[in-house]
Image 1 (cartoon, one colour):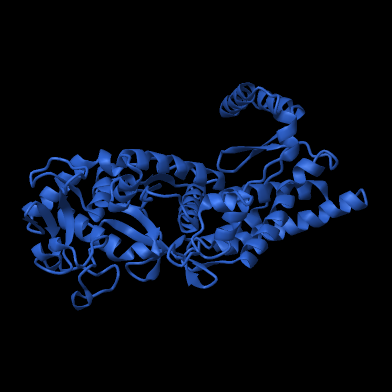
Image 2 (tube, rainbow, N blue to C red):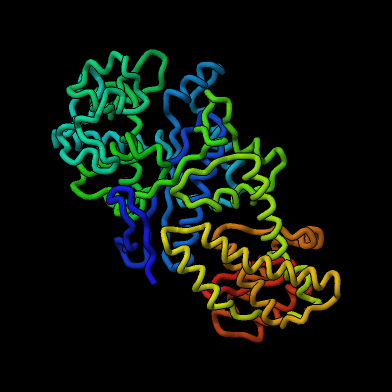
Length: 481
């Protein structure tokens, strides 16, 4: 069974083969921190979180980097409007990013590089491009010369004849700086300083980096010249990722990424989501409705990552109903485990695990993976209804425990987790340090195969209302019971 990924650059599904056995290097373009994150951001980072979790479950060691663009015209305009520094705006919205994204169960990246912390690496990369004649300086600016890179357009499929002024991104066609260009599609690597703007010293005069060179330098500095996966929204294919390829590959003489992976856009009632149309929705607006964070995550994962995702009230209502079904299944063990006489953990259902793997291996097919989860959850919900209304079920208790543990395990791979209301009430007076210490002691006992001590600690935790589930990959999850 082979994991296959759709590569934007080759426009086909490809078997996933890493640069180094068992290891994945992955970079995703992060947010420009001038405002609160919207639903489009939520989709992107939930998707890459799902991809990361799935790769880890498949046995890969994943290094995931996601940047913050903390210097940009949009940040500058907001800072000027509020009469504060760009750094103050950036810090405010970096903090807001974590406040909004963490409730969606998106794991923190291994690194969050900021542009302002990587000026030296950016300047070094620009210097290499100048020395190799892929770039040229003009009155304090430095531009990448698109015509010098013969493969320009290979990601987006655009030919040179299709390139137009303004393709450099975030630069107006009417900008006087465009008069310095050798070709309309040439894009800025370094912008000369304007009055009252933040600037850094450079061999070309005071200025600041262009947008595209920032990611190329951060990838190079943190992950190397070639990485396994470069991800981002479909709107970044051109010009941002096209320009990243040109810069990095011209400088390094190597492919920037083996796999280019892009998620589809979010629409609202079939229209593109944008501030100008007045249909712009932030993550915190959704959470403040209030809306259960797992509903948002489920809403995102119900569509294949490469397809458009249409945000409608009907879709959110459907995701809410879907989450209620999953939640009932995930909490089945807490509600009925003791009644069914559950004691020791059961082996996971290998047939269901293989069905899930075969489905999601097809280009991270989260809708297919969810179908497997829903089948388990619906059955557990039916069993729960029998236990509630009739006081018993003809089904085998061990088999139900196996189904429940399998559901919890697979849901965790997609980042879907139910909060235990009973557990929250019963454990609010617990010493969290004590619980952590007991789990660590049990892990140590298991490592040296002292199963008697391991079982003793597990039973002690169970008496405290905490059930431990040991997974095949060696990890242990905790469920309130």
